[in-house]
Image (cartoon, rainbow, N blue to C red):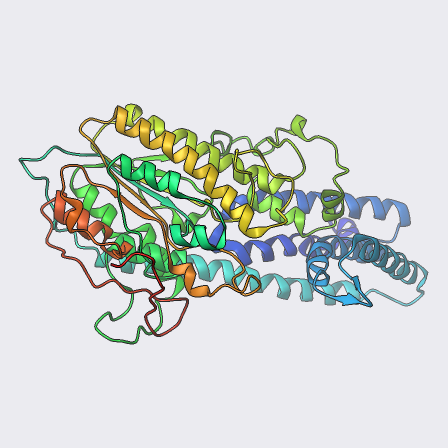
Length: 523
C-alpha cells in the first residue's frame, strides 16, 4: 500500500508550492513576525494539494500532473513580481506592465507549455527526482536567511543587553512630583519650514497650538540619522552610533545591532529602574517593538492567535496576494465584499485599510491611557504616520489608491495627524495630575521621492521636535537641539541625571560627513 502511494505522491510540487511564500518571508523577516506567514504557507500547501489531486484524477498520470501543478504554482506566484518589473518598461509608448498584455502572455504560455507536457511521448521518470532536488536546494536559501536572521538577532540582543548598565544613573528627586512621560514619535514628520516651502501648506495653526499649551518647539531641529533604525537607536540610547569625536562618522553598526539597540535600550532601562510602568504600542514593525513592556497595546482582532482561520488578514498576506495572480482581480476591483470572511475592510484598497486601522487604533487608544494605566508610566508611542503609504485624506477618510500629488498626499496625512494630536494633548493634559512630560518628535523628515521632486535629500534631516516640560525654564533651550539629547535633557532636568548635552550632529544615509540644512530661525 505504501509503495503504491509513493507512486502517486511526488514531493516537488509541494515544495515549489511553499517556496515563494518562504522566500517572501525571508525577504521581509526583519519587518514582520514570523507567524504572520504561517497561514499563507498553509493555504499555499492546501491549494497545491487540491490542484495536484484534481489534475491526477483528470489526466491519470502522476508525473505529468506534478509538472503541471508546479507550472501553475510558479506562474501564479510570479505574476505580481513580473508585473511590477514591467511597469517601468515601455515599447513604442506602451507600458508593458498592463494586465491585458501580461495576463494574455501568461495564459498563452500556460496553454502552450501544458500542451507540450500532455502531448510528449518522452520518458519523464527521471524528471521528478531532478525537480525534487532542485526544489529542495531552492528552499535552502530562504531557510538559511530566516535562521541566520534569528541567530544574529539573538546574539545582538545578548550583546546589547550586556552593555546596558544595571546601575541606576538616575533617581526621583524628593522635592519634585513624579510625572508621567509621553514619548510620541511621529514617523516621517518633517520640519515646519519644509511643510511651508515644499508642501505649500500652512502648518502654523498646529505650531501655534503647541506654543499656546507651553511646548518648546525646536524650529531648527535635525534628526541625527536619516533612517529610522539609526535615529531611534541613537535617541533611545542617548548617544551617537559612531565616534563623535571625529569629523568623519564612519559606518553605522550592522542592522541586527541597530534593531537590538531599539528593542533593548538605556531609556527603557532607566525608566524601569525608576519604577515606571512601560507602555508600548504595536505599530506593525517588530524591530521597533521593545523586548519587554508592562502594557503592550495591539489591534483587538490581531491579539488572538488561536482562531487561525477567521483571524483577519495581516500585512504580510496582503503583500503576498499582491505578488500573485490575484493582483489582476485586486487592480480591476472585481472581487466581492469579503466582510463575510471577517476581513475588516470597506473596499479593495486592503493594504491601505489595514494600515489605517492600525493608525486609528493607536490614536484612539493613546488618550485613554491617563485614566486607564496607573502612574508613574512611560509611554513609548511610535506611530508610523504621516509616513507613506498614503492611506487617508486630511479628514481621515480611507483613500482609494495613491494620491496624484505625492506632496499634497503627505500634507493631508500631516493635517489629519495634527487634528488628532490636538485632541490627544488636550485630553492628556486635562486628565493628568501632576502635569506630564510630553515629547512630540520625528525620527526623520519626509519620506518622499526627493530625486524626482528635485528636492535636496538633505531636507530629510529636518524634523518636528517639541517638548512640554512642566516646571522647567525652557528659555535656555535652543532651536537646533536634536533627538540624541532628548532624554539626556529629560533625565538631567527631572531625574537627577548627569548626562549633559552632546553636540548636535546629523548624518545623511551612509555619508561620512555631518550635514546642516538651512533654517529660517537662527539657533
